[in-house]
Length: 122
Image 1: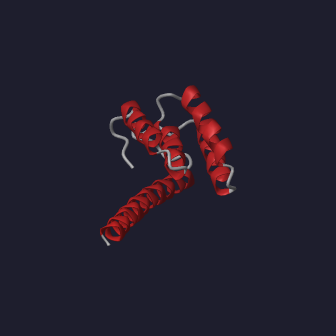
Image 2: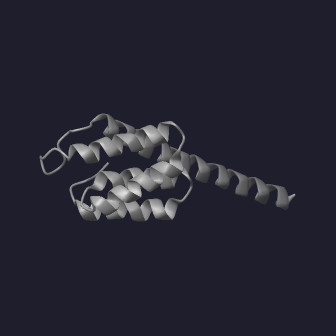
């Protein structure tokens, strides 16, 4: 009988862990989509982001909505190389990592976003 209780405990812990990860992914994706809708909004510095960057970030959002997450990951990685000081691409990439269950890369990517702009928080 103790084996069943232990098994149920592991199942419950696993359930809560997956629920927490799902909530994190949902929150990150929700924030990302809201940010994608705010194309051209001034960033923390008060300056509007470059139109090309905002268009490409919006394209990444369309890729996500179309289910082509691999292409979205590649796009956001390319944007990070081209615009290394803009935290938005880091945030979107982190959301994709979290969605795929890659929580450590998601955490590291979000930390990088904060390093690019210490006032950036989502």
